[in-house]
Image 1 (spheres, rainbow, N blue to C red):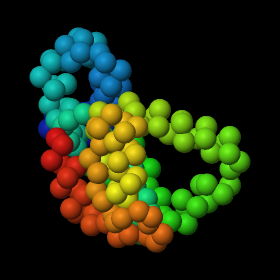
Image 2: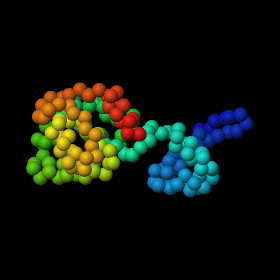
Image 3: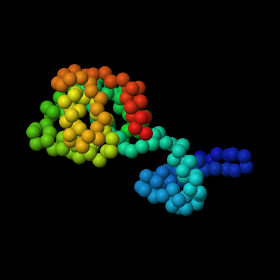
Image 4: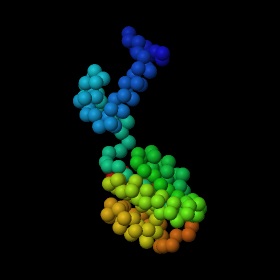
Length: 173
């Protein structure tokens, strides 16, 4: 037990953490704030405030896709900080490995799987060449915010300003 004294009260820190985790699990499963409050024996406003404390951003789900990107790790870190729901960023080398390590059928199936996974996101940010942006817009019914990295074909990694991208992500909220 991890006990904590606050004035004349003794709290079980572990119990508090479990209750908070349970509240968030129920909410992410679609249970209303009112029902969560009732289940946990608290008020709806507490559940609402709890969510506000952990909120990173408002708005719908966002996918971020891009290649060939020089500063992949920096963009992935920033995207996680901003609560991006799906991240698929490749360097030029990774892009070629993705293609070369599969036969035609495997590559086709994996690309189709990626398209199906991305299609569920109401907002997609795509970093790529002019041609790839148009292709993504056609595949995803124009729900794509394209950031052109240059004219096709791109054959080397391109640096993307992470803070500029962060601003774009925040503008969707």
